[in-house]
Length: 204
Image 1 (cartoon, rainbow, N blue to C red):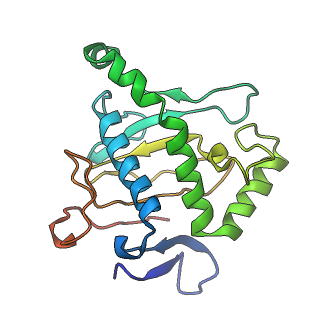
Image 2: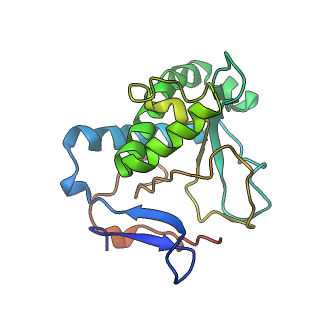
Image 3: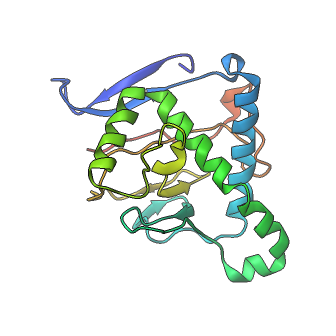
C-alpha cells in the first residue's frame, strides 16, 4: 500500500475529486529530502511542547490539534504569527526563540512538497490567489513556495472533529502524514506495523 497512491472521488460518477493521495517509502526518497522530513518531524514535536491544544478546530471529538502559526493572507505587510503559551515559553525562552528561526525553512519545505505532489493543482492555487491579490501568495511563488502556507496545523493523535465547511479563498488543503515516534520525533522507516493510528476518513 505504501508504494501506491489513489484518487478519492465524491461519488461513483468520478466527476469531483475530493483528495489526491500518494505514498512514498523512505527507501525511494532522496537522502537530502529525507533529512528535511526528519527536521520537520523534530521541529513539530518540539513546537507542541510550547503549546496547548488548539480549541478553534472543534468541536473536537477525539485527539489533539496544535497550531504552528498563521498569517492573514488578505492584508498587506502581515507576518506569520507563531503560537506559544507564555507559561510554557518562560521555562525555556531561548529554546523557544531558537525554534522559531526554523519556521521559514519549515514553511518553504511544506510548500515545495505541495508543489511536487501535483504541479497542476499548485498552479491553479497560484492563479486563484493572484487574482484575489492576496499577499500570502506572492508573484514569485515559483521561487517562494511557502507563500501559500497561511495556517499550519499538526496532530500526533487520532484527531477527529465534526464535519465543517470553511469559506476560505481556496478550497484546497495539503496534508502530510509522517510515521514518527511522537515522543522523540524520529522517523519510523521500517516496521510500519508498529505505527499506531486510526483510519483516514474524509467526509464531503
